[in-house]
Length: 339
Image 1 (spheres, rainbow, N blue to C red):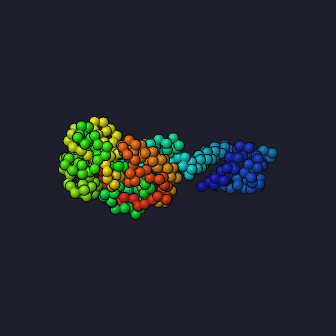
Image 2: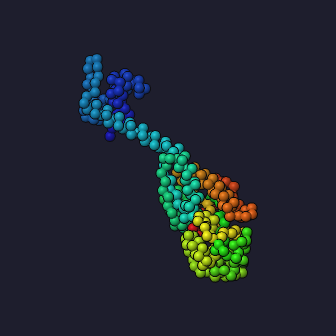
Image 3: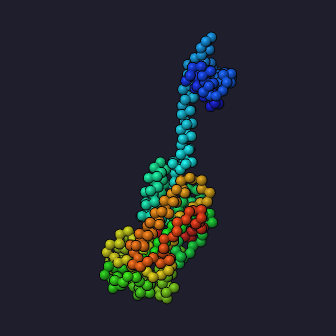
């Protein structure tokens, strides 16, 4: 195996033509260069230079070795540059897990600014539910996961990850456009006790967040359909089949329905970003900053869009915190499945 330092000796002799000039470039003594050259010839088993009384030229074998030495030097320089770019976060790979409604607006906003600042960072975007994605975070297959949690149905926390809070996503009442209650500015859940409902499949088991909230208010909702696809839910409400609770992130196309805020402290989703402590990927922190900024702006816009009154404490935009100072345990495998 050739020593790269000795290969550099041949390369400098090819560039400058003399041992003295090569020694100056390498900051070695001429005798040290001669010794390195002699050792390299022993390793190669062939003469690399033609030594005349007053001149020194590379043999054909020496020139070929110098050509290879140049290629090796170029590869090493490219490797240094690329590794430096990775270390500084200018290049690399970022693997993001996210749930469906986060991918409609929150994630694209964050990615828009991130990709502008980091055009050479490759992205791998994995759509799924938090219980499916969090084990992949633990196994090192993902760098972060955008997650959600329901206060009315707290889930088991995962000790292997921490969560930085991003925003509160309020559950809003969606009614047919001409519903008698559509004219009210804000509704209580008990105002809808006698209505047929379109609800989700449930956070844990078969009981949805709507049913948990209704039971606490003293009634059992009459459920006509269950779906975790909010476009289906909106379509059924639009057709007059029933009313529904839909998180604000799920209201991308609310035409033909009436959307009203609900007076209820715990009917919202807590959106956060789950991280694996000790992840050495240098671009994670930069993306979390962009995600936090996007969440703050989006939260304020949603509050202005859907709230006729100032946002309550439970749904106010959280103060921006870094992943290091605002971390809590991530949802575990029994996390919410409605996205």
